[in-house]
Amino acid sequence: MIKIYRSSVFYLSLILISIYSCASLRKVDMQVPTDIGSKTQITELSKKDNVEEKELMVAHHMLSSEQALEEQALSKAKKASKKNKIDKEVVTKIIKNPFKVGEQITLDLYYIGIRAARLTIDTLPPVTVDHKKAFHFRGTAETSSLMRYIYRVYDVIDEYVDYTDIVPLQMTLKMDETRQNVSMALIYDHKKAKTTYWKKRIDAKGEVTEIKREDTLIPYAQDVFSSLYFVRTHDLKVGDKLKFVLHDNGKNWNMTIDVVKKENIWTRLGTVETFLLIPSVERDGE
Image 1 (tube, rainbow, N blue to C red):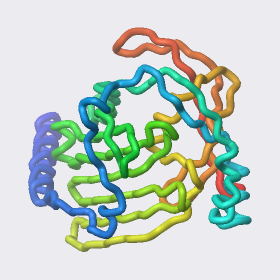
Image 2: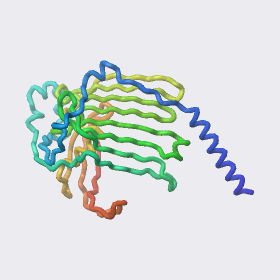
Image 3: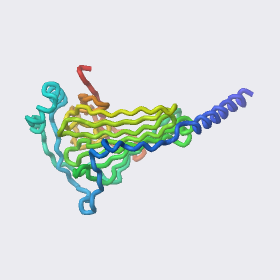
Image 4: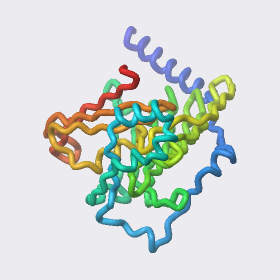
């Protein structure tokens, strides 16, 4: 009797969740405002220019995050760009192209033994952003068919990264979830040391919030998504400390990645040799 009772409660819960999900917020297509979207122009490359290069001439901006943040505080970034202090720290390297069109990274999230969601990261054909050749990376997060009854998630993020400087040029995000719809655009202007940020959100009650602002940017800073690819352009060795500036939510953080050791781990592709990396962030001494 107890088993039957518990089973009934379980199925009743599923029915209530299904009703809740059906009554949840529906997807709304929210377009980027003209004054924001017109700041950059993204176009596909011609077949001639879309040849995959085996080697890249990469400009690594070796200015440490501490120096960059101190310089910004003293000169408000404008004086720094006039003196070209940042540009003097550029080191150009020839590296093998680590990004192959068609590459796909898949991460599965499990909850109590059930696959709850999947994150897929794709390397798409390069494009031009304001006449600059750029990598195009896309991340897609989606709940499984079962978990969708509890909470629906379908989020897509597109990142455009400069082909030479390996710095973000533009990022867009669209979130289609049970209790919210979100559209976001973030445009990086490394020459003017600023970002243009726009975000629009509709919550479960149908209330709309919209944000437009400009933030100060440390030139050549990475963001959370682009940094995953930026690290791959370095020839890592145990004991290395990779430092750069991370721009997130209008703030500029000191990012340090320690290359601790090598480890062999098991994956679905077999046992592979990996680096153990420990990231840490700091801003204003915290």
